Image 1 (cartoon, rainbow, N blue to C red):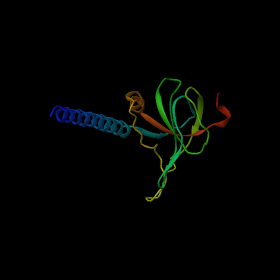
Image 2: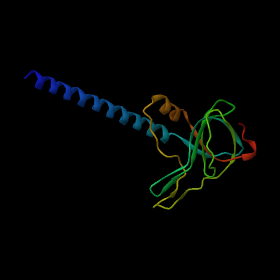
Image 3: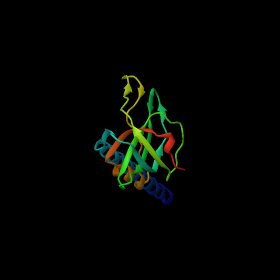
Length: 150
């Protein structure tokens, strides 16, 4: 009887932990979706230089391709996102990269293709989700290979 009671308590505690974890993930996902919905996508008129905070390499998922996505700070200390379609380089935090203006390519044909927005990601770490929510503007840019500092 004692063992049965202990087993019931353990099952109850375990199930409650899972519920809380799922709620946390759901809340994080909803928060990031809301933040992304507030992003303002623009084609920049002039070159823009950022110091990289986060880099998400272009990727493929099913029939969709997602562009490179850079998060960085400008010289004015604004946190921005940059969509970049072409480079295959890997970038690290702290690198300074200059982007030339680029137009939105939107090569999605309804069944697959190149997307004009970054892949949706949610982190277990609140700080990483905070970074996504600190972005107000996403620019389309092409890396100026002649002006990459290392």
